[in-house]
Image 1 (spheres, rainbow, N blue to C red):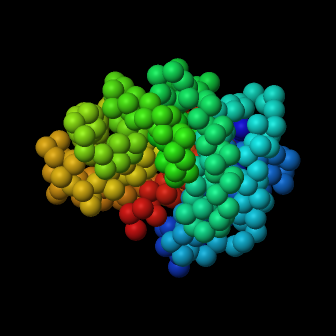
Image 2: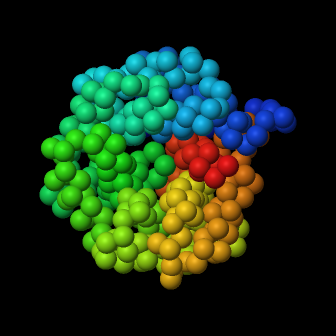
Amino acid sequence: LLASGAGAAAHLVAAKPQDASPEARAIAFLAGEVPRWSVENNCFSCHNNGDAARALYTAVGQDYTVEAEALRATTAWLQNPAAWDDNALGLEFADKTLARIQFAGALVDAMLADQIRDPVPLADAVALIAADQTDDGSWELDTSGSIGSPATYGRTLATWAALRALRQADRPDLAPVIARADAWVRDVEVQTVIDAAALVLALGGADDRAALAQRQRCLVLLMEGLAPSGGWGAYLASVVEPFDTALVVLALQPLLGQSELAVPAIDAGLLTEMVAGGRAFLLEAQLGDGSWVETTRPAGQQSYAQYISTTAWATLALLATR
């Protein structure tokens, strides 16, 4: 479920908590938004109860204080994957494949934060995700023909997110599904900054020849796309955006502990500078209420869904680099 419209503008005027860290302000903002959607719309959304909930569960896992009520309904919802497909059916922006992936992502982070301990819901969720895999090993969405966005992902980011859930579930019977996705990740052509960042995430610490070669191609593109401001846009010459910057930061940050995987495209010193520069851009772009202006395709549009998902991705990037 994806909502659009001018709703974001109403949220840009909240007072800035002067004594809170950037991470705490972002968490407080999302904690207020996540539970609102299901109450006001009688359904659960990929942006509030998927992406934004992921950020809150990650914060809980890092010992930030998040009011229990902020996640209570979402936590219950995530434990019933069988109901995900019947959630607000028929709405214009409903994409079952994407919804399954986004809700499963939140479920993974809820488990990592010890908010859900039962492994059965994730096992059920990844069975649904596995059934959606295309013959080439990726996950094709309704929006796969267009570049990805914070709330709609696109094929490459969706494939990483699906892989993440599948790996976390650790089901031997799904090993062939993971193998097909791994092969696609290593072979697909890198065309955009989003593709490059998502593929670096999907490759993780893999050091086989195909993974090393693909990672280098991705890192070269990310280095070429770095703007003087320290951020990134969707394409090499695009306007710098919070979402694209956050995604690149999330992709590069894990390499700080494995900098040998980044060379020769990016040496350890430059890698550190790129992560720090991306974080600095996000801090500068953060609004007074803790949120970020939505990244949209095309740029400059208004969308509540993209507003919440953009803020979720930026929050995840800050939490990863604090």
